Amino acid sequence: MSRATPVENINYWRHPSLSGIELSQAEFTHFSFDKHVHLDYHLGVVTQGAQQFINKGCHYQLGQHGLSTLNPDETHDGQSRDAEGYRVKVMSIPVEYMNGISLELGLKAHFFNAPMVDDPALYQYFIQLHDLLIQGQCSELAAESHLLNFMQLLLTRHPAGVIKLEQDRGLSWQQLNRIKQKIHDEPWQNTQLEGLANEVNLSKFQFLRQFKQATGMTPHAYVKRVRLELAKKSLTDGALVVDVAQQLGFFDQSHLNKAFKQAFLLSPAQFQRRML
Image (cartoon, rainbow, N blue to C red; front, side):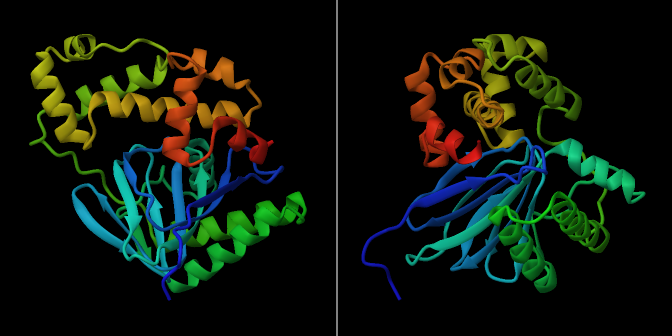
């Protein structure tokens, strides 16, 4: 049944005993995510409706019974498939945490072959785990035990693949990694297109075209998203909004507020209140 008015709502949580793991729950009708990346692994399920998104140039639809498995630094977008909108539960898992779990299981550092898996059993388990963690009433032992059990099932039932380096994208993997590392290491810098292009001995025009071809995003959009992802982490750690804006290269606090709300539907202060 169609809604009389569109609903755009999102909430964030974290469990006190699971450092670095972010939980969110949202309901969207008309809101669309522009192309973006995350610094962490993102797992998620749709509990009502369906989401459609593009990942690596391919179109996907995430409905009930599917689990999204997005690797860090993978460009994607997202919007409702239908006018009725969709509801989604998401868990953000730091790279270090995922690598630690992989090592404990005797597996190599993990990345997912596809941005979603069709696994009804894991879908139901994820919903139960997510609900348990956002309620925040279980013990540290119970929270960690349930999370590790879920991750063991996910990583063993859907093992890591082999990285395929695409050679026809202009920028080599080494060049792209060098540029990304520079952006991640110096997010506060007033990044210039010419400076990035010089890193890989290309003209500004060549670099702009090849970077977008390789990532699906312009350098400006990529830098902005990295800053916003780092802002979330700093806010979760209790940093002042004004300090976050200054430390991550935003012109001022109002520019951070505008960009943050456009990306996450909450102001930095609203997000921080939910996470602390």
